[in-house]
Image (cartoon, rainbow, N blue to C red; front, side, top):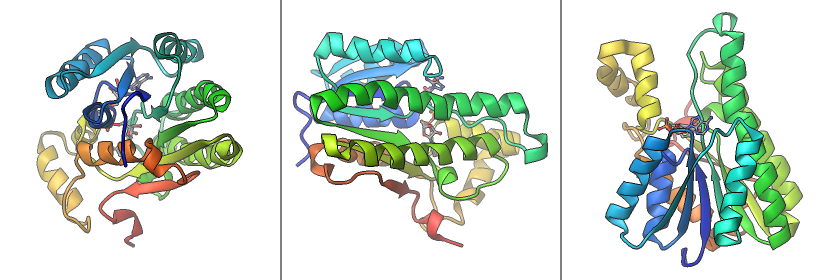
Length: 260
Ligand code: NAD
């Protein structure tokens, strides 16, 4: 059912965490990848890891900052020049930002987080959707968060941006379904990636591992999610097997967002 032979997928935030995990899953199923990230070294590292596991994989890397619309246009054009089409787009690059009460949440910090998590996702959709509409096919997965569907606290910029990603997903999903394009968002809970490690360190300093155990003790599954679990979900959602799923937000959080 899930077949990525001759499929071309762009992944932003492809140098780390969820982006890298999705890339691994799609490459293992024969997909051709364009990995985008602002961190060139981590992109090289992703390519190395993917080729170690899938030696015939096709992995292009593009250094770009998703907050710069010209650089977004550039990674889209690079993909078209190289492969002539875009089948899937994992619009995923994001940052958490510093945690603080709303009154203490810096306005600069708010702007910075929204710029990456929301503007970056919007620019990506805008330029990729133009191509997919002309093609008459394509799938997009935007990375939201449980912080995009529930109140989490201490994360004004993150919450605003991720709720915004959910809004963009629903709005564009309704616009582009008629052109054969599906657009969905994922809402991951706590998945153990460098971002979550950084977040625990912000909260607990050297005791971050103990804080992590306590954090997941309230999760119905009593553990962090694994990046590959999210990577496999994204690989499914971007495949032809998931074509009729559109404008949806899919939590992947061990059930935590349904617990009160
Ligand atoms: P990560 O920090 O491991 O990876 C994020 C990647 O995005 C990094 O390689 C970073 O260099 C890149 N990036 C950041 N800003 C960028 C920019 N302006 N331009 C280009 N690249 C940029 O984090 P992750 O956990 O893999 O997070 C990926 C996405 O998943 C983010 O949108 C994050 O908000 C979301 N998310 C993560 C979790 C989790 O628990 N890990 C939960 C919910 C949502």
